[in-house]
Image (tube, rainbow over all chains, first blue to last red; front, side):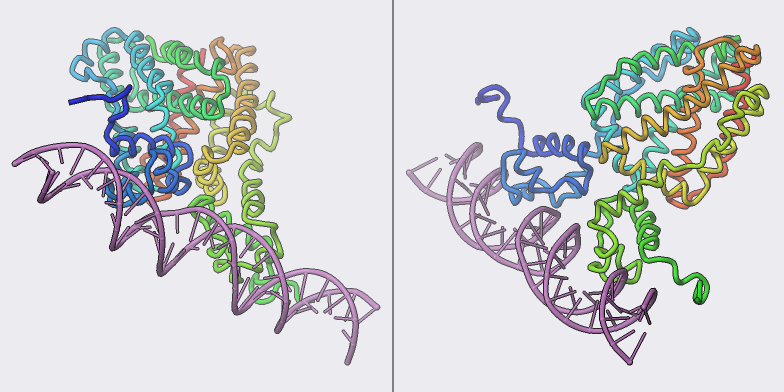
Length: 205
Length: 205
DNA sequence: ATACAAAAAGAACGTTTGTTCATATACTGT
DNA sequence: ACAGTATATGAACAAACGTTCTTTTTGTAT
């Protein structure tokens, strides 16, 4: 059983299609990506695609599945403990967010999300629910704990979480935009840390 | 000379094309809008379009011009005075931003911007320059004045402006998303005001 | 080696796309 | 009323699109 032939050739065609498609979709969008382009990039004819997927939309669905499957905040259980550390919790959280921003795969998926957001109702709902609400939930819990322990001033935890996450999102969008044009992100890369500093000064008691 | 025939019929065809196109583009994007669809919506044949525009892209350019021509902050001169009023300046600024968010025309242009942002390099640059930097410039000036007059705590004015504008943007994006699906925005519509309140509490001295 | 299933190729299909061109109609100034 | 220009029409085009066939090749289990 020759597992992998030369270097890493014998990767399944189906996975290859998804991989190639995720790059193309995240660069040119759904409409801007033709099945012929996908096929040629995979190295097969377009008709061969249909041995693996029913149609183009099914390919997109397979790709889009990965948009929201981010292993973010793997340790939800011990939020209560880490939230007690106040600022360093925010720093850790932000660092994870920054990592996603610069991670090639997550970057592509974020770009795809932005491109198709207004073209795909399901994506819109997932953005509002999973992407937004999950983050708000996690953060507001942490802020609530900080308030209980008088680490930060009293306010609506959801509101504070909203304020915190919105800036993270905006930084991520700008960085993703710059990187799409291969522009320098040096002036923005420290924005994450500066945001935490500013925000902590804003809420600390 | 019969100026306007029945009600307001004799509006020029060219303006009509732009008007119709701006709606279609902002709903389905550039690729998702065909010249035939535009023509039929205007009430002419697709060939007649080419009497007014060289090609499809020229139509888009005419539409896209209106994205950044927002009569925002009409009174840039008296920023120094209004900034002295501290929080009420932020409230006024935010109210203008909120108005744009809910204004049908500006809403469409914002949506178009978001849809085409990753498909159009020129749009990306304009977003970073005009859309972002102009706002940062205006706001940072105001914050600088507030600091000079000890209305707010000392910090990098650009940084403070960035923090302030990023949340405005995020609220706008979410509202635009919800309104696109005709969903209720009641829970979000007060977010603008709450943001100003929270932010002022964060920076006031 | 043979048989069978999976995957790829090649050709073709019906649409839709943006655009062009020759022709017809409508409007405007003299 | 007439000429000239601007605008609309209808037909046609070449190219690209997603998809569906039939046929060939490949890989695998017996």
